Length: 190
Image (cartoon, rainbow, N blue to C red; front, side, top):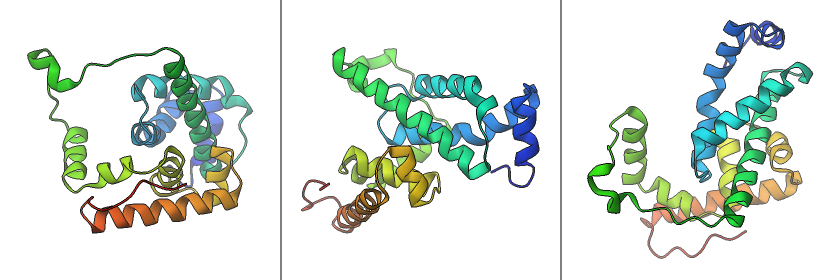
């Protein structure tokens, strides 16, 4: 988080100052990418670029504090992700599994890949896959983005009571899945 200097950084970014725009980007890009990846965006980097283009187009009209900015940006990310899901639904694609691509794929050993491998080995990614899309989105916004329930509801376009129910059910499902090592847990409920 940028913290105390956020209002000045925002004002400078709204005037188009490159260093302020870079500061904001460096602060929120991991959050946006993490949210998109955790929610199954087909091409998170591409969708994130659309989010930041939208952000730049609308930045001059934004008014609020840093937490409201993050909520606003994640709202854009959520909408771009939904748009991508809809496009994908209309345009069927059959991606080739990485295992079948053989030597044409260069395996990455960066920090992100290592972190994902650790999460996978602990069953966290599989547990998240057991959740409904709405449960996963609500959990990621609440935990990863550290947004209050009210802002999660705004991002998702749902009533607060529905978001609270999604969070409660999502946490319960994760707890059951992780406690049993992924066995004996039924489908996620919504």
